[in-house]
Length: 507
Image 1 (cartoon, rainbow, N blue to C red):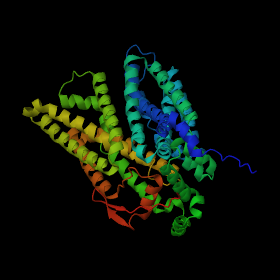
Image 2: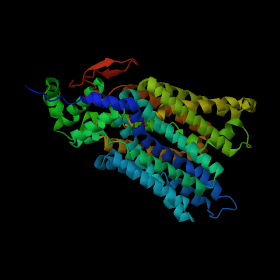
Image 3: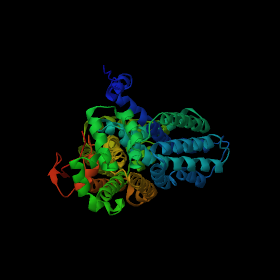
Image 4: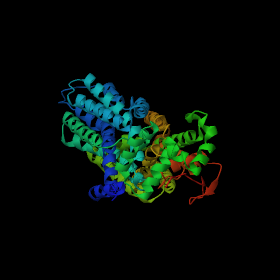
């Protein structure tokens, strides 16, 4: 009599029992929560000077500052952001996406604590420098980690959560400063970093990063924790192994064909390949278009602009600031929904066209309002165009480049690529804020917005030609799309040329 040993339970069945309690989507949201909260701290950093400086300039302030010192406090945070982006990209490539987030959360918490305990001007500068550097650190890892740990169906809305968190962080910093002393506000901001750190502790490392380091078993365990055992996820992981690890594709004829096709490219540096250079150029154009459309000029000079458009000097400064913040937050929330249901290209085009029309319309009505007394009664039209500008730039031009930073670079160049483009964004940010007052003084407010409108139009036209569609595509498919672009082209729904994508998978 032969007694057969019972077969081990199927792995998919074991996983299904876990999925009944915690779905893969819930786990992906959990993994994305840490980077999203860290991004909110970046928004708090950007908005903190708006509540810090007025309190320091009050007659009863324990720390007195001059006008020159106030400008240094405001600019000390943006100063190290570009360098922080480069370091963030290198750090996540060397230590891993999860480890990079743990380190930047500690750095952020230290910066906020230094601010909360500051008793003089030098300590404030140190705290602002650390939080600004941490703000740069969080840029590349946040988008990349979310992109590498989320399902293509939910990747858009989770990545949009980063820009929503930034807008929400600005609003929270302004609210804290409205109701609390600036040191208490800084301490409250530091508490968010504790939450982000704990969330990252229970989240897995990026499967793509582990696979690129040759740790296939750890990568598979991480992928299954995030995505489960359904057939689509199995195929996506096998495609990832075929592209990054090469193990799964070695025994498959399709995988062999792909390896043969890519053999000539394997001889050159990954930083000289088309799939790195094309995403790099695309994001450089996207970030330049976003920044030189004046998105941060409106944020920095919102009170003065609302006084100009409304035509009154009696507007409450804090109320105006909170109104603009609230519009920005609601728009970011709408962008999250749109990125779940609308493609990247249609949303970018709609945002670019709407931004251009709003800026040019605002320029025209500001000209008539300031030059012809008869039109001063129609100042509400300028306000309408200002609000529509905030809405249109917030649904596409502002969130999309940050979302695509984590999507369109190959895994082997994702760290440096995201770091370079994020750093370029902050360089453009500095250039726009620095040249803004000069433009206002030279060509006037209406002329400045006309310049931004023309740049928005030109940038949108260039993006129409080069911007790919990445919605509902895996990261491997996006990489193949850039590699094959220009070889096998078809016309997509927007009328632009896009490549036919084929991915070798092992069922």
